[in-house]
Length: 102
Image 1: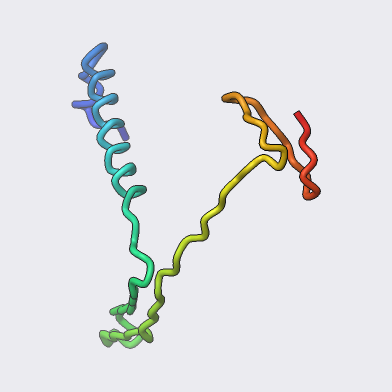
Image 2: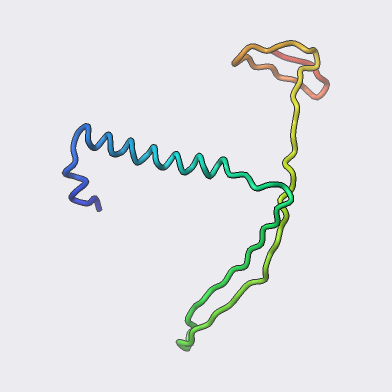
């Protein structure tokens, strides 16, 4: 259901409001994408849950702790076997034998 206040905003004000909301959502997404965990960092997680069983008794449980260590990301260097330069937006396909197809 759409709130009444939203329906009362018309024209450029509504467009400006939508644009502002979208820009703020992308700012947060960009910051999250830029967050990098350093290699060698240990990350641990333990889940806990509380619930009421079929007899109405409150229960609590905790999972085992799981720990992982962040590994280095692999790096890759691309080069042309023939040493030729490629223009922007030009596509060059290379097979496993190093043959280039333009």
